[in-house]
Length: 305
Image (tube, rainbow, N blue to C red; front, top):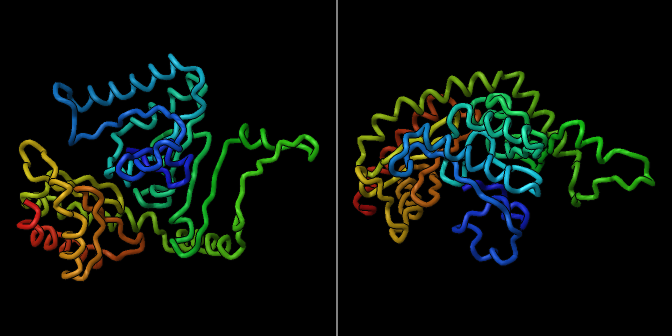
C-alpha cells in the first residue's frame, strides 16, 4: 500500500489498484512486500511474528534476485495507503538489510518529513541510513511547488565530472530550482527554527491522544492509528470481526457532507478518515477539529451501518 505519486515510475513502485488500476498495462514490473499493520494481522500470527515474516520476505527477495536496484518506501508510515504507522525498528532493520545486500534504500519523506510525524527527518528518528531521500509538501509549508532530493556522496559523485564525461543527470523540468519557491522554502526553514516548530508539534499532537477513548466509543470506529500530526480512523461495520464498511456506501461523500455541517472538511480514503492538520495549528484549534470529527462520525453512523 505504499504511495509515491502519480508519474508512471512512481505509480509502478507505489501501485495501489484502487488508485492506478487503469494504468496497470503501462507500468513497469516491481516487487511489492507487505508491511505490518497491527490491526490486520494474518490469522495465527502475533504482531512480532508478522513483522519478522515481512522482514524475512524482504531478505528472501534480496537473496533470490540480484537485479534489484533499490528498495523504495515511505519513511515512518504509509500515509495514503491507509495511515499505517511502522513499528519501532522495522525501518531500521530494512535499512540494515539493504546495506547487507548492497541495495539502494530510497526513502519518500514527501508526506512524512518536516514534522508531520513529529520529527524534522523521519529517517534519523527511524535510525535508518538511506541513499536517497525525497522531500516536498512541508518544505514550503504548501505555499509553493518545491521538492528536494538528498543523496549520499557516492551517488552524487557518480553524476559529477567534466563536461565531456557526459555524467550529467539530465532529468529535470521547466520549473526546477524556481528562485521564488526556493526563497519561500528558505524562509519556511527559518520559521521552523524561530518558532521551534518541531517541539511545538510534539506538544500539540498529544491532543489527539485525549480523544482515543471518545472515538472508540463509536461503534463505527475499529482502529485509530496516530503519530505526530497524522491520524487515521478506520471505520468498520463489525468491530469484533473487523469488517470494513462496504465502499458502495459512499463513505467519503457521507463523511464529507456531515463534516461540512460541522464546519470542517474531512478527507476519507476508503474506510479511513484521515486527519492531517496544518503543522502550525494551535492546541485549541486541534481540540475543536477533534470535537467536530467525533460529532461527524456519530452523525454519519446511521447512514454507514
